[in-house]
Amino acid sequence: MRKIRNDQALRYALGAQGFIEGRPQGRVDVRHFRRVVDQIRLVQLDSVNVFSRTHYMPFFSRIGAYDREALDQWLWGSGEMFEYWGHEASVIPVEHHRLFRWRMDRALKWERLQELEQNHPEYIDDVYRQVAERGPLRTRDLDAPGQRDGNEMWGWSDGKVALEALFLKGLVTATDRSNFIRMYDLPERVIPRHAIDAVDPGHDEALGELLLLAARSMGVGTADDLADYYRIRMPAARPVLRRLVESGDLEEVEVEGWGRRAYLHPEVPLPRWARGTALLSPFDNLIWHRGRVERLWDFHYRIEIYVPESKRVYGYYVLPFLLDGDLVARVDLKTDRRRNALQVRGAFAEPDIDEKKVGRALRKELELVADWLDLDDVLVDRNGNLFEYL
Image 1 (cartoon, one colour):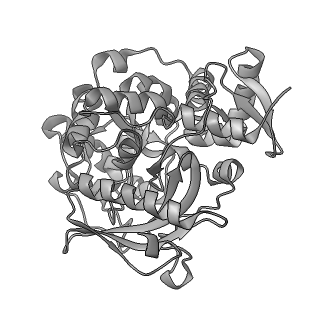
Image 2 (tube, rainbow, N blue to C red; image 1 turned 120 degrees about the horizontal axis):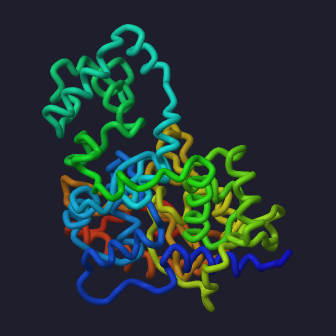
């Protein structure tokens, strides 16, 4: 079994994720959006908007400032992408629609859905009929959407439960995300015919293709790393990975210090240097798997959104800072809409780091972000070991 050093694994990761080549000069357009998706394969969505919608950041991190409205139009209006459960809620190239039909066919039923089916057995079919006849629709556009239950964040009404069940089964899809609210319509009115008509490869072949796509986007990773990219369960992933190694589609390797076997995609090149400077969303593909982040950078990172404020270590919405290919700091950001400013609520350098150098580089990146978000200023709170250099 071939052995590779951890610094080589790091370069594979940065190169596969599009950080080595640097941000383009000049005007950014749809071609650059496509290039990013070709590298990262899918873009995670999240409703938290304390700083910026999370799906905007992976593009900014790789290509710099761009028109966010143009990106949204491309993601939901071009016919090149569709929304589904990839790595959590994600936007995915339509060519990969066929690779998720096994997930649509095996759609799980959760307790709230089971209650709805038991108490109102005709309701979901009626919701589907309304979408077919009057779509695209939001939940509130239904004839009888129902009332939200007592859970403030996930308190879905009957209408929302029905629409999400249909979405999970692939019977409806999202056609817009105005104010981050899903607009539902029939797939055949949103997704191009060629993608819908593409041959279903079946469960095992689809998993194989998804794991290969994950390997291309990660360069090298453990079985856990690769399976997590598309949220594939490990009992299903293990035999498929063995088959991919036997066929030569993946190479089994040993990475220094990882303590477990890893898989290398043979077509992913090894960059000569580790490069890349960017703020990373907590939901950026490069850092999805927190265990992998620790193996590659010795950087312990956890999102603290759901941690009580008194127990948070770094803050509510903390973004790691990548400088010349190394994770050197983290910064807690908030967009202060009243003052139209980017608020730095805390900035923390890693141990044994040149704080002055990192602080200057971080300040430059923060100013780029603020300008891109049309904010007038960067306001820095006196919190952390970097604030005096910002």
